[in-house]
Amino acid sequence: MRAAFAGASTRGPAAYSRGDYSRAVRELAPAASRGNPRAQGQLGFMYENGFGVPQNFAAAADLYRSAAVQGDVFAQSRLGLSYDKGHGVPKNVILSYKWLDLAAAKASERERDYYRRLRDAVASKMTSDQIVEGQRLALIWATGGW
Image (cartoon, rainbow, N blue to C red):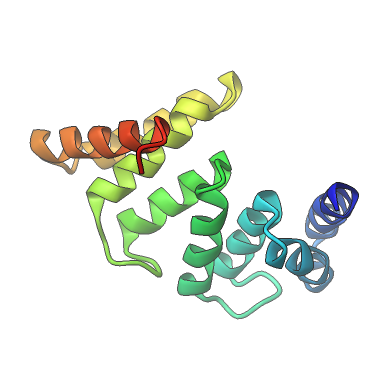
């Protein structure tokens, strides 16, 4: 099954890069439905932006959530932004902070600063108590307590 994940995970993004969104969806959807977090995150992005599928924030958030709980950094960041905007999920700055903080903590060195900036932009709209709660939730999640 790993080979199937890899194939869809490369063919889907390749089709997306060429602007062949319909093919990208066809390549990513089966892997996403089998639980491939990378495919879920990419397909979620396509639903969020209406690329090859009708724009659907709820479907995007569901896909992001499925991938985020598996530790996919991209999906964690997109789910955090979804909570910040209230796209497909109720607007919630604490959960937004939590997911963006988790993404920043797990991101590659090259991406870490970007995710920190997103998290900090959300934090600028929060009270100190809300930030503490977002950090607490991220810590609980990161240590497997959630």
